[in-house]
Amino acid sequence: VELVESGGGLVQPGGSLRLSCAASGFIFSDHYMDWFRQAPGKGLEWVARIRNRNNGYTTEYAASAQGRFTISRDDSKSSVYLQMNSLKIEDTALYYCARDSKKYSHDYWGQGTLVTVSS
Amino acid sequence: DIQLTQSPSLLSASVGDRVTITCRASHDIKNYLVWYQQKLGKAPKLLIYFASTLQTGVPSRFSGSGSGTDFTLTISSLQPEDFAIYYCQQFDDYPLTFGGGTNVEIK
Image (cartoon, rainbow over all chains, first blue to last red):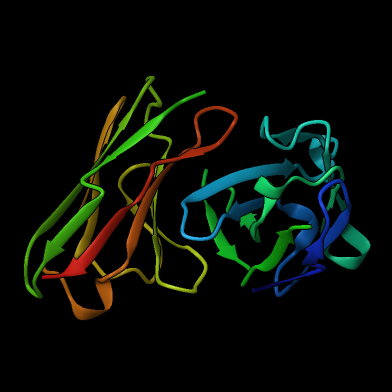
């Protein structure tokens, strides 16, 4: 199993970024997928979830992401995405994608992609 | 939102010590409690789920217990590779939330 994030970078406040997470080594379409983040020197924060096809690709968001971020997935590409709009300085963090294990936990995580929001 | 309070936030211990970390939830979360280990510059690693079930490949010196609002992670004999930050996470309700972390450092 491997998860590889990409798309991070430096963006000005108010700007947008689209993060990608490419998965391999498992049946991607079977699993819910999540995005997490970790601000420099801080703890872990859950950002968003997308369920699988059997569960209608429904989504959940943290309050900090609701209305600004959109999680999506493309099962044909084994990829999950996070579209981030109206970025704020406090969105600066290392963003991880992770696989839901189907056992109320996340068993595989990517290495993270760094998002820096600064003027 | 369900708040998770971990204690202590910093734990100084020696190799071979028995170490216990606690996680208290603001609401009953049944046994939907997960423990992760995170080393500097690395992604979190799943240790325990359903409060007490050891993830495949995790050494048996790690154990978890508890239900409802009070949970513990125990390392029976601390090894050099165990010095890291440990987080609890609840899976009972959205938003999924984490404790603030416990930094286990070398004494």
